[in-house]
Amino acid sequence: MVDSETLKTWFFREVLPLEPALMRFLRRRWRNPAELVDLRQDIYARVYDAARDGLPLQTKAFLFATARNHLINRAKRARVISFELVADLEALSVAVDAITPDRHATAREELNRVQAGLARLPPRCREVIVLRKIEGLSQREVAARMGIGEDTVERQMVQGMRALVDFMLGGTGRIRRAAAKEPTAKEQS
Amino acid sequence: MSGAVEIEERAARWLARRKEPGWSDADQAQLDAWLQESTSHEVAYLRLEYGWSKVDRLTALRRPSPRSEQSDQQEMLATPEPKPRRALERPLALSAAASVLLLIAAALVWFGDELTSDVYATGLGGHEIVPLADGSRIELNTNTRVRVGFTAEARSIWLERGEAYFDVAREPSRPFIVYAGDRRVTVLGTKFSVRLDSKANRVQVAVAEGRVQLEELRVNVPAPPVIAVGGDKVIAEGASSMRVKSGSAEIVTTDLSWRQGLLTFDATTLADAVDEFNRYNRRKLVVDPTVADLRIGGSFEAANVDAFARLLQHGFGLEVVESDGEIRISE
Image (tube, rainbow over all chains, first blue to last red; front, side, top):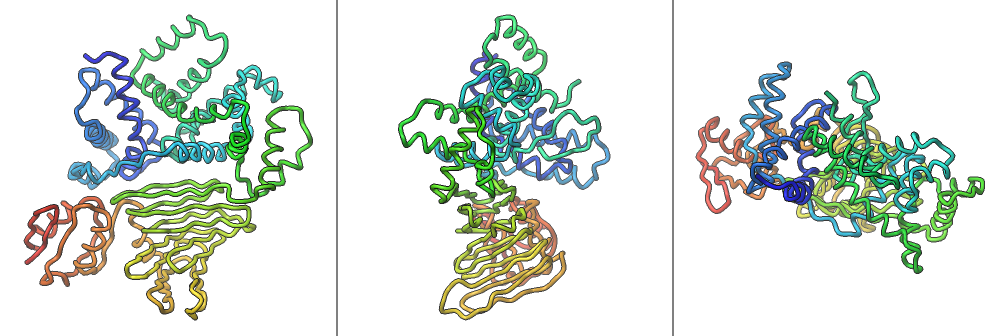
């Protein structure tokens, strides 16, 4: 059994940095972009649970093998997927070498990325994030400053946080909200 | 059962609240309980914590600053808006945020120079999508390097190596220009790819949608600019002029199948197909002259060299031998 601190550190250091590569992998093999967040979360949960019994020796290989198996199971369960897709997934020998590691960003590059991420946010959302993160105001103070309700501030914060994190982890920075009743994808995640 | 998006939103709300003053032990206990309810909750929360800590670089700018840090902060907050004057037109407000934005507008007018100059690159077999601040997107193919330099006057990209697909947001006041080798591709708003083959001194442009203009930049080469529209493919080679292959959207789609991770061949020689594969993979295919002229067709996963080799072996009856990181194909 692995203790929770070790588990968390492992997840931070070895799994999450692989998200850009993982998302590329999933995007290419799964037709429905609306389900990508779901898939990613499921794969992370499986990998995390498995690691409780013992951290894998090769994290990258383990992550992608888990991802591949999960896709196959999902495809089989959905039953509307064509036979070709399943055969294709099974025949796919994940040449882990061919999944190029992303280069480690320098501090400057990360700063640029944050800047670009901020630029992509809607103006009010951006202002909330700037006031909280840079000015260090509390949510209440931000609400007072901007003349809006605290609930709104929290909503903007949640939206901005998710978009920025998505962007920092290699995504597009556009997010789907859970608000929609129908499962139609508004935007890709 | 909550969907994944609901769980992420919940996790974000927890993370936001945790930084608030007045976070109590009772709150912490509630968070811990929620985290323990399901591993999905835990990983969603950890993921946000990880990503959000990367945004923490922003807080480095909070401290009152010596001159250099101040311009960093202004640059940090500068959102490259197409009309920088917009902030100046805002009525003077008392909030700190607005006055910070005014300072930024001044800085933009003052410095006026490049707001961003970033380099993006992929390795062998790589594939990366880069969103740009104006809403455009660049998709980098294998072994590619681009430099992005946006100013108030123009959106410039240098394709220094490889191949990229551009999905350009329309912005009539700022042309979008791609420099590749000795050429330049200017667009207003469209979808197209540019491929640079430095060794052959060749630039290829495939247009999916819209309109581009391809020009020769060297002064001593008298080649008139060429216009290409959706469905066209332009090849500019060597010192001479450019040929436009007007065609179907199909030709362009085939050319762009790399965006789905596929290589598509249609009566392509084995030699040419192998050259394409080798752009994406470290393990190189080598073709014996006796079989180089075989024609093949079909779609193949760019990264799956083994599957391709197996197909040649079982489908065409060729001999496939691997040694020293090379795969030799012969009769």
